Image (cartoon, rainbow over all chains, first blue to last red; front, side):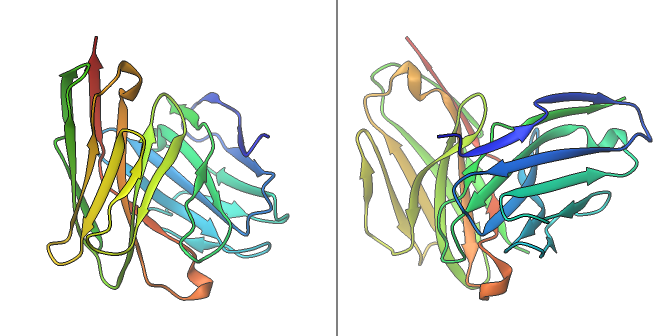
Length: 113
Length: 115
């Protein structure tokens, strides 16, 4: 009963390096989301997807790219990491657009030096 | 721009106390308000509220929405140390089928329950 799984759980990068965060869900959800959580700012939506092969920008998309090649996976990429991207990243998924609750992964703590 | 404000930002109580957490919002074409509990890792869903005046209840937790005054409260009675967490409030808009269920979150209330 895995739900939403994020990998890796922790990562330290140097400025300018690239990396990809992986989110996998086994609930057959259509909708998937990437958020970042920073102190004093709550959770902010980076990008989201309403189905396989589709992506859309959220509130804070700059510096990130995403892909949804398979329904169960949603990838978040940082092409050239910056210290401002130090954060905890959460992936979430939901069954559909009918305002169903979102199910969250355990997060990835990312530090950019 | 949608806005969600939670208060207080932090709260320390003793076991057995009753607490009330507040969430006010400004959102165009409001659809629903959701409460989540975040312990050390993933936020977990508590309640979704869409109609004014109808209380949602789960054990010692309850919540109600006032769409006229644009706020919601989350009550926890007879608090326990296991209630210590960040409580997040979020709102969704009426959107098209292609734009998904986007959530706008508040900053959260850090609740600490001491034995």
